[in-house]
Length: 331
Image 1 (cartoon, rainbow, N blue to C red):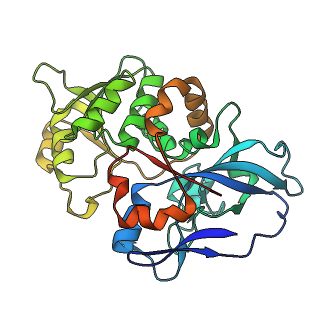
Image 2: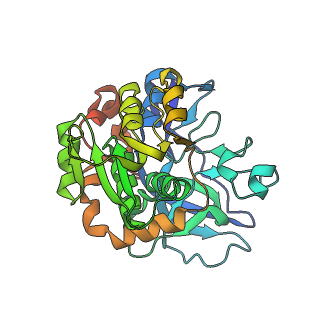
């Protein structure tokens, strides 16, 4: 089977690998059809590392994955052959304190697609635990691949306790920010996004979201601000935008090591800061949001490429242009 393998910094090759065996008990063999290109894939390609996660051996990219059920192992019931599924890419240990308390996204032993040294899903087939494989009826595989990045927003909404009438600000109108806006809106929040890129603001407005290039003076301060840009400037804006007693949730990781909060301001205004790392127990809710908002997903699905085209796509930095690119597997 074909796989997109990162061999080193800036070196991505399409190589032939053995197909996985028949699924063991509790597992599903999935024919991968659609994989979204995430910022982390690009970062690993460009830098060979994200923080302390360093690519030291060849690694398959991709964790925003959907496909169809190709085979089912014993005990993995309820998965019709050919059904569209979305995969939760992290497999926790199931034994530690975090797993036992439902916070398995914090499991120190989690094996997460395309996080060194674990292979990702830009390959023709994967074996995956049934408990982290979710049916996505009514969605195409391109649409179902959005369940993974949307789950980050759904989790942030739950952690920040966004509900009906909550005024929510989102800094960064890239894929994560716009999907987080859909999650917050679905929970009843009143949402506004800000981004320095006019094309992304336009994309958000295209699907009916309130979005600006800069925060208008007349816009109310927010009870919750989700920082999705991963930039130092974005973090400063997010902290300024949240009102007294509000919640600042940190989602973006782009410049994480150099981002600074104003500690005195946090104390004087009684702000709560929540770090958002991946997600737990939310993917079914994300799939439900996608099913209800299919007519708004087109802004994410305008660019698709074949697996063999991925090395040139990354080398030529074509990923900078669209809001989201989906890699079709196989071509």
